Image 1 (cartoon, rainbow over the protein chains, first blue to last red):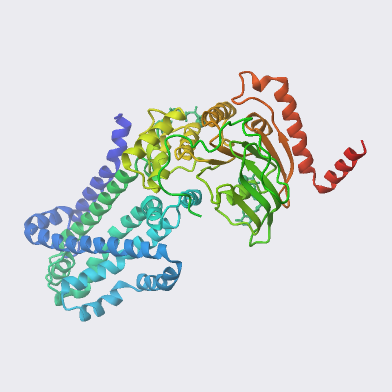
Image 2: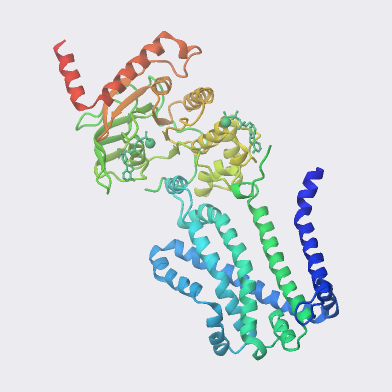
Length: 262
Length: 302
Ligand SMILES: Nc1ncnc2c1ncn2[C@@H]1O[C@H](COP(=O)(O)OP(=O)(O)OP(=O)(O)O)[C@@H](O)[C@H]1O
Ligand SMILES: Nc1ncnc2c1ncn2[C@@H]1O[C@H](COP(=O)(O)OP(=O)(O)OP(=O)(O)O)[C@@H](O)[C@H]1O
Ligand SMILES: [Mg+2]
Ligand SMILES: [Mg+2]
């Protein structure tokens, strides 16, 4: 790699480091108390000190988010395939999926927490509600975007419904599904965190959102920031992992994943 | 609607021997005289018309008979209903009037080539060619062998694993041709298959197509849609010139030239004369009914 190329890669990291140094410098210069705004070093220290608690909470939140994502993929995907089989079914049910999508999750979460006894399950349902719509709508779009001429070719060769689905419509939908999945990954995490906030002390109180609430009550602001940083890190990790999956599955054939060659 | 399922014979069926110039039997079909085919009529269209829901009358009163082993070109201006006619024959659309009759009583095995290659971008060249066999549920090993052979036939041996993205325009078209030929179709329908290619590639593919067709010894009938006068004369044994609004068959020309074409045919005086004749026929067809009536009246008087 050339020097310019290396520099290009390093720029975002460099900007981040400069930002942290500036932050630390200002906090020290104006002697801002840690309960108002802790410096990055204090947050780092809190992260190290409270690592056992925070790490456990992170696993808890990640578990909810990833299970919700899995449910979103399964149910969203299955529903999309069902919709693709029957326009009538799609027209009958799709509006309700939209209703579920546009209703703010903070407004539904308390109800779900009341109705569902198991807290983990109710958190899961909340995260799933937020995450499943992008999977559903993208996959439906993808299933309906198969090349018309190819579809006619399948008809000409007497393909069964199942063959047309498996060999034509599902592969055609894959790029759309993966784009939806990437959005859903971020939303599942957001859904999990929001639901934990709503559940608050009433819940089992072990996710990262609970750690933030708890640290707020105890005025342990550095720990609060540390938990926040972990949530961001989880989001970035999910997004990157799904991006990698997208690249691996599409790189041979889809425009979005092709590298430009000189 | 569904083509006969099951196995594809390794060898072309000997149902109709001879190929070019073979047969020569009289047209056995009674009724309105469809235009003469070469061998026995594989398909006969009687008074076929197509009106779309939008009200567009794309085709009207098409009487046409295509003989077994013929290479027929449909030549006509844009929008005259060539694609529509091809789709009716393929069974991808239903005529709104008239009938499409088949020699065997049912639609035979059909291969279809579109204007663009229409490959599955997620599948390798081999998998694309394998598709019709896969849909017919042939054993996997047989699928692989037949598809590889079809790829080799169109000069793409060694490109089995390549994805459409990695092939040039001409190579993609060859894959598409191999996919159409892999089932050893009795009827090959081609809708301006080489229109998007450069002239050199197009000429080469024309030669390859003629060679593949001749090699099948009259077992494959081709209906080839084109805009190009030169291409239609070079390829076909018969040209049907179409006119528009509504689409009709205005004229037909028989092309008497050996197949495959001898070397130097493209530059021969005979080829030039036939191209001129076809070009004039196309111009007459495009000039509209009034002009045609006048032309006919003039011709009658002389
Ligand atoms: N699905 C459709 N619905 C309504 N009208 C149609 C449809 N398909 C074709 N037509 C009309 O039928 C006429 C013939 O169309 P067709 O595609 O058969 O022409 P073509 O001869 O193949 O033209 P080109 O050479 O440009 O491909 C056109 O006027 C077109 O607008
Ligand atoms: N993205 C790619 N990845 C791998 N191989 C490629 C790629 N693009 C082209 N090739 C290969 O490079 C060669 C030349 O391709 P190119 O598209 O330049 O041919 P071309 O001269 O335009 O042919 P045509 O007249 O058929 O369009 C071909 O063998 C093709 O397989
Ligand atoms: Mg057309
Ligand atoms: Mg090219």
